[in-house]
Length: 547
Image (cartoon, rainbow, N blue to C red; front, top):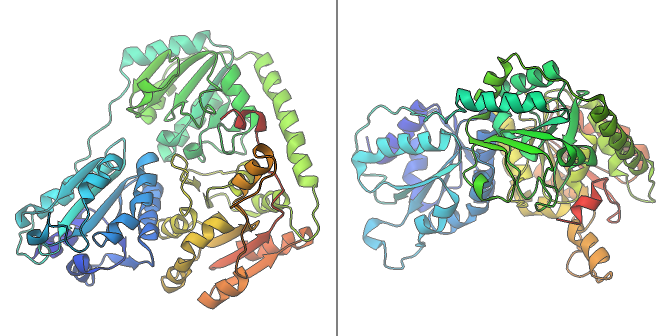
């Protein structure tokens, strides 16, 4: 066996089902070894797409997605997607070619200092220089990516090494178990809980899995604790549950969750951190006690007055907490106070739903009706921009890992590729990509990938012919000096049909029922909503302006 065959055999033994990539001379031998391996090779039209597809597979399954890219330009094209995975602790293994060893360090064609460039945004960096170490390196890199806190790992292989003779040794993932909260620590938290009267739970990505969600629901219902979520926590708690408060934080948080976080006498953050986004730039820091159980190595540097902070597995903590005979009695005034905020928030939602525009569809109305038609196990992938806020205000996520986005980097270009990867990883679930027109044009070429690979995602394009977040800021903060934020678009229906994708466009509210029926039918679909760029989705605007 040569190195390429050893790497592929190792990946297969580790359980890898797909490799996403874009071929180049420096990975030609690796792609050739994939051909008869039984691992599906998904070829894309851009490296950002390939790596975001792998990232989404990791988010959906909890095990590393794998991508392969060409040296130099291909590697550089992948970096936004790698950073998304790093910021959101998504398990990812990126394999890149490199220039031949005899050309290294000579400023050769395709050569950039790949390991130096990527090191700050990955958990570990490897290079296979010695053919006999190929299996060990791949197994170790995969294991590090899969171990908590998860994240991307980079492996570089020079072009001439792939074809060199090697030997296969058994590849096993050796997952390092995360630290746990010691019994005394759990007892301290329980004692704090028992003194609380205005308690809330903030749930994040660290409990957004089957066991974590089940334990969270059990704990919340047993002691009647209201629950808010972070962006990556959407799906950890059913959003149609009476105890659900909403998403907290900048970019889609609602006043109910935000005010609960601010006013609670105790915030129990499980698998979630109190980041700048969650606290609107640390302007909405809880006034009461704060207990954080999360695998965030940066937590101690953040300006939050923790009562207790544990660098530990939040699922294990919930397991231990659920076993306690906890005496907790919430104050009824707490629920009345939250209900008053909810009533005010609902009036804002109703106002948004009541709007009418000539020649445009009301996106609030569309997403409210879409929510009513969605199956319980759907997956929605949100892009970056003002359009994502409609999906927070009007779409209820009701199953684990039911909402994906590049929450902690905020990069455009993630939603459509990630939807493709999510659908391949979870073919039994309906997957919706909600993208702005500006973002969609960054990855639109991979409609061809969706058609060729027969990936039946649903794409909803919110077309306002603008970069609307900045357009709104210019109108509000720059005395209406609109510059660089308005643009035109192609006919999205004709463009989609040119790729072989069934498409539909609507620009009036009367067509919403027909559009919802269209986009929820089986198959690959593209739906364009033509909306007014001056429509403003309901949000916690007072807090957002302080970010």
